[in-house]
Image (cartoon, rainbow, N blue to C red; front, side, top):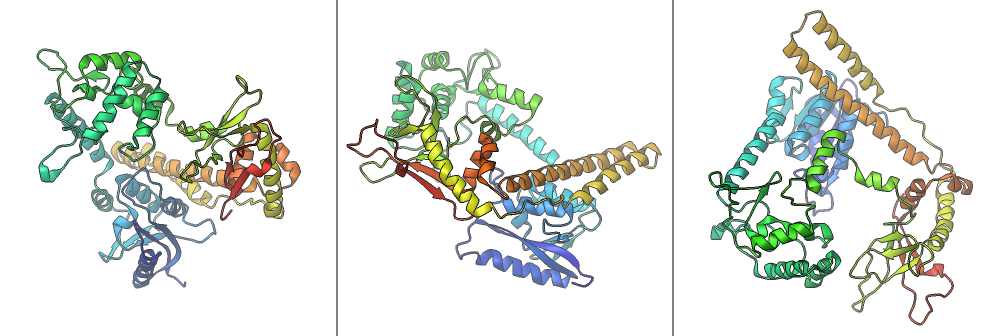
Length: 514
């Protein structure tokens, strides 16, 4: 490598139909460009078939790239100081992505960022580069805030004008520029019929499970193409849009002069009286008093911060195979249900806890939970001993400790510079805010690193005795390490439900790699 700067290459493509050739070409281009600038690619990161434009889609390699750049080395202790990409949009498409990357590149003076297609080697430490990057990734954080305010204001103005807006709702047609048709103005006949029938069921007092089944039986999916559940059904049937009204921030949009609710300029399926009746039945999502599930959630986020509800659910599981067990019922067309099975405690004629199919359309398979757990435990222990008994635990120190130490020292330098009047308040705040964010990012990296290491070490040197010391969360983690799912097949026809438990009706599906 000599005196060349050690850098990494990042490649991403949304749809790589040529079996990773697209990302491979990007890496080769980055290798060539790095050589032209006195650098060498020592590590490659690849996100294949993953978009960068959707904030809800995680890019594992990008997140690892940012963490390693911030630490200035990889988990394998390879020094990395800069990043090469073919196009900037390969690595950043959203402002928050650019800010993450920029903070990682600027933890010290060695950071570098180069873009092959524009033949650009950027000065990441200059103010102009921060502005350029934010503009190229759509807008900066302040501009995002301004845009949100502008969008909110526009939404309010359109609401006062009674104009249909937003994403397409189930029951209404989407936008069509060729026909000059706005979204949600005209009813979609087939969906509107299903929606009206569901409303009639709700007005008659039918259970939410019955109404959900009505949507399922229609064979028409949700707007997003997902399965029907109680929450979206309740939301749709209590949405004021069904009668031409609109609510914003817990209040009906009303005429400023007379105070009457503004009736929107779109086709409807219900009367205001029917909508009010629906609110009396369910006010979780829309409430004239302003208190809804969403408002309570937002208030809680402000005081407690966002929570990882999946982690919370895992921490409170009572059954070892909840969501790991899958229903093995096969219908007349040969389709296996494969719905996740839930644990249910004793009740009614069931003296024992059971795993039961969670799909209301099926609900055909259930089995005693304790017997299923015991049978699966025996197979899990055997596999764990075979695969992990000789594995040694890792006791590696976090490779970014040096970066965090430097950032904490920099914090003290910034304080001293301000206290000694070497910098003013404006500069102090600028330096402090950037440094605080970099420290927070680095501390989060350290926390994640040790959590990942602990998860790996959980099974190192596994012996049968170790299983007994595991709590239910650790047992679920161990099972999930070796099994993708456990299919529970129905009791064969002709066999009594009170027959002896048959472990052969359990079908563990192993993971391809562990």
